[in-house]
Amino acid sequence: MRDRVQTALNQIRPTLQRDGGDVVLVDVTEDGIVKVQLTGACKGCPMSQITLKQGIEKYLKSEVPEVVSVEAI
Image (cartoon, rainbow, N blue to C red):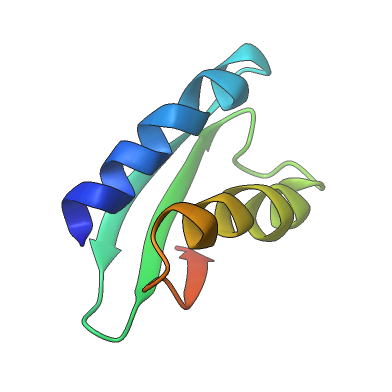
């Protein structure tokens, strides 16, 4: 599952990078929780939680149905 999550993140990474941010995969737990680190402009951005939940999490769930949640660490 980790490889599929990484592949999906690689698909959305250019969108984040266009705005000066990025996302790094930290961990994928056995129970479907994906832990990521937002970097660049995404780190500390007031809209980062919306990006995380409405953007990254939504996309990952559509590409990897086993994903339950995405958390920023």
